[in-house]
View 1: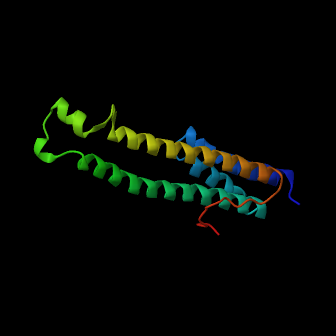
View 2: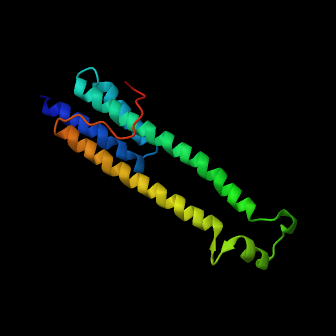
View 3: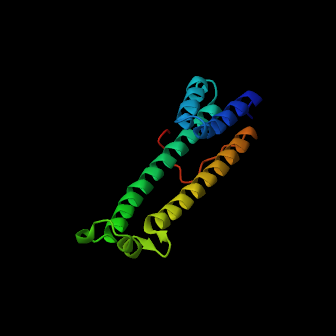
Length: 151
């Protein structure tokens, strides 16, 4: 059984990752500060700190991979639709090659990428809150798809 103080600290570690929406890199700074100051005092706090940081680093890695895939795809899609010999301003040319209906190709890709990003962030928030509730109840929680950077 864990003390109320240990449960509260572990919960705050998980919830501090949500500061990323107010403070840049807050999802790394605050959990690291709390975890590093309290990890020697409690094995439960140490476990939860590692889990929260592993999940945040995993999300960062997955986001970078997504960007590495989507940016070249976006560039390829745009360049594929632009014949270089006619690369001068012509409204008929732009309507014919760059737009699909009334929506530009870039807009379609942007909508898909934006929707995927919003979905990932929404799921991330739900998982963080779920982990915080588990910590508050004194239960251990392993984040899904989390790479164990800290063991």
